[in-house]
Amino acid sequence: MSDARHGKMTKSRREFLVQSGALLSAVSLVKGGLIYGHHVGENNTIQLALVGCGGRGTGAVGDAFSTTGGPVKLVAMADLFADRLEGSLKPSK
Image (tube, rainbow, N blue to C red; front, side):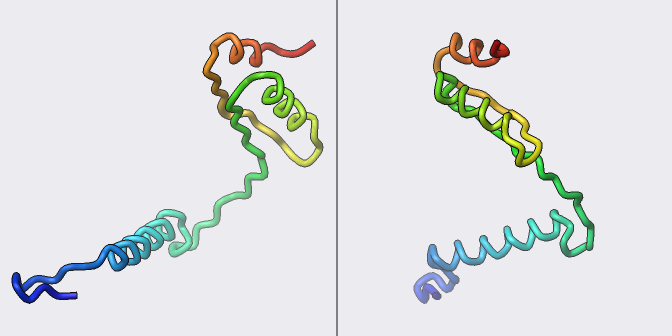
């Protein structure tokens, strides 16, 4: 869409989003190696992040570790209360 008063091109917000999305997709393809033909090894590890380390959250992580569906790794934990976070880090007996 052109702006005749100023003699310059202006883009709508939709056009900008479409074009920037296409550019980001192309960059991620190049960075990911699809265009260059690189093959990345498969990683089947299930990565868990625990937000809220109370009884239910800690129990859910324990249940995830006891499954036989594949390797599981806890990669992050967060809680508003430091004592709950530290209590959840201690091994259960």
